[in-house]
Every structure is written in C-alpha cells, then in structure tokens.
Image (cartoon, rainbow, N blue to C red; front, side):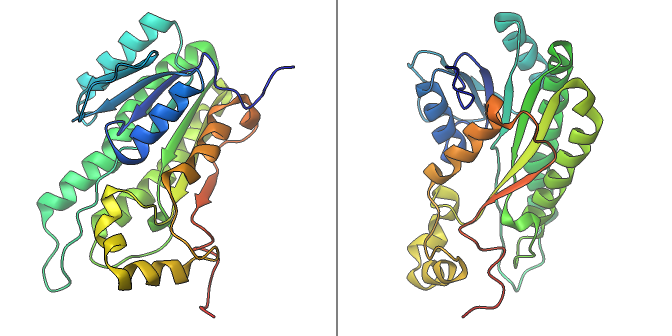
Length: 250
C-alpha cells in the first residue's frame, strides 16, 4: 500500500539549509529517502550523507538561482519541492531609528531571495505540471512585534507572495503554502531563550505552555511536501503552540 505521506525519491531544494530550521529539515528529509539540495551562503560543514548535497550560494542573486535550479533539474529531470527556510532577523533597540542597511538586508534575504528562487523553480515545475513550494513565514506575518519592522514586513510580504503564486500557478498543478512558526528554540532566538524573563513570557503566551522545537515543524513540512496535501494550496499553517489564537491572557 502506497504511503501518501512519503517523500521517497522526491527532489527537494531547501534554502537556508546551512543552519537552524533549514538544516534540520534537510537532514530529516534525507533520512526519509528524499534527495535534498541544501542552499545557503555559509555551511559549517559539508554534507557527506547520501542524497544530501550542499550548495553555497546567495539566493538574492538571480543568476545564482537560475543556474542552481537548471543544474538540479538537468541532473534529476524534475524538481518536486522547494522549501524557503532562509531568514535573518536584525532587531534594534527602541531608542534608535531602524537602519536602512538592516532593512535592505532583511528584505533581500527574507523576501527577494524566496521570490527569485520560486520563479526559477516554477519554470521547471510547469513542465512537469506538479510541485510544492513551502514558505517558512512567522507569526510576525500576522502580528506587529517591536523594534524589528524589516522582519515583520518581510514575513508579511512572504505570506502574501505565497498566495499570489498559488493563484497564478495552480493551473499548472503547483501548490504554494506557508508554514508560520511561533517562537522556536534556534540560534536566531537564543537571546530570548537564554533570558529567563523573556523565555517565560513567551511560554505564557502559548496555549501549550512551551517553546517550540525545530522538530515541531517536521510534520507540517512533510505533509505539504508529500502527496497527502495534493488538494491544498494558498494556505497558512501556524506552528505556534496556539500563540495567535490565545487572545486575552488568563
């Protein structure tokens, strides 16, 4: 009996694959017999695992992403899944004006990069009349958080980019969806996690009364990457422990 949740033999590209959420997903999907291409500017170590390939590149460069996607398609004759897990956050202190340099870097990394590589991948997914693009957004796509306008704007923009691409390319069998993490324990959030007051405040905001772990994102990603989600597109799945629906604090 076929397992509709299987990603066996799927060709998967993961941006931000050098660390945090992207690296975790790359390793876990490789374990489940997917062929994974992890793309990032920096890798702490090169993969020596079967069917897990690292590509050092800047995805905000259109020529880079075009070349990467062409090479992957020519090698495998298909591209099944793109997961945009790339992301940076550059908050500032409340008494300073947010810098244009931080704005530009954040928007380019979190929004322009996913747009460019999605465009490049879609050209090949159109040929095969199938494909799944998964954009990792954030609860910041729904809520304003202090002192970090570029991150909030980029994740809100990525959320709506997903819906735009889903609208334009659904006729080719291409599905585009969002996964929006809440506070996940990664290097990006370690400053908050290591501050006991901040860590507890975030615990209290969630219905499940805990921080998320990267492993909490695996199930939703496998679902959207697999044939189990063949009739789902343009949707937001928030993996936030109930943060967004909590409303008034007890």
